Length: 427
Image 1 (tube, rainbow, N blue to C red):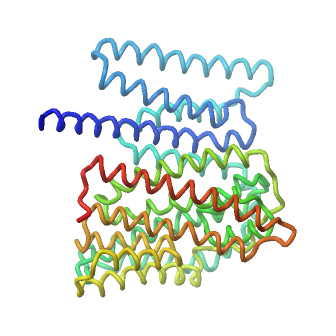
Image 2: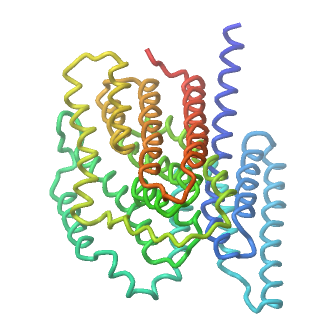
Image 3: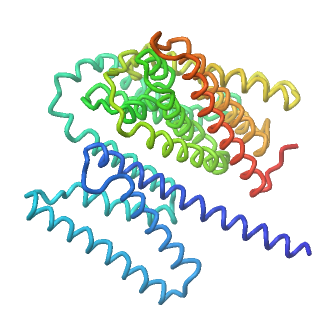
């Protein structure tokens, strides 16, 4: 009986791992294809998602379910057919429209490649997808170099110089209360790089699609974006989208503890993907005159110090609490309070507490969910405080609360499933 239960648990865990690979494949196809949808290319987000997920499914069939010879033949036939289909499409466009659409064909092939990579290395597939999105989104923007003076180049150069000096001067093994300082600096640099690229795209684009602006604004600065969306009278579903990009950004914070990241990435990604799909269906055709002027250059000294200060709160708290034997409920309350101020600070607080072995994996995952839920709830305060007077406040709040309940419910449910599947202790 025990052996049967153990076998069922192993099979369930394997199914869960394969399911997550499919979810990541969906996300990668969506990220690659969203820019093609924006420019009304022949193949949009749905096509890229389809090619990515088909590629992942084929590799799973080959590696898990089918014999090597039959699986190889299946892969050759399907991948060959998909590439031939894309080439025929390019030839057709060349003769009909005098434009073969090489960029779109390339993005579809990349969707296939990332779909394959999702089976072997999900993290690398996500990184490639995001980098490709950045390249596609910026390729037509560099001729507008005069507009880039708005990005405060002086603050950018100053910040980069300081970061480079810190990275060079601080030894690799330098620790404070058992925490490797350089690893935190690396995470800090990566986060600000993501925020800066998002800021760069917002300042240099002429795109007025609300989905595009909310998506990038959430990466650059979720609170400032929420305020501007409310002031402009944008729908509450745009704030829902900002919440999803904020959640994705939290993955970077958790890189300081790869073990915790390995568990947390499942609930965060599943929650974000569902939210991205839902908000896309609502906002894809909506345009706005929103300019997002409140979002400032994240690489200026002032912005960097404020951003670093919120992370320092989590770091100092984790160090102070290490001298006390607190009940786990106290940790839950503390992380909720920090989350109301900053989702990034709450995530760092959990990561450092886990890093110093103050909490186990199960409690760390629960605390992370509590902190992120608090960061999601604070969007109600930011949006209602700045809401356009012409907007029906009651209807806006009801819709926003509905979206927030959906997001938090999925996040909690996926957290519980993850704890159950991996048998994580919360005692």
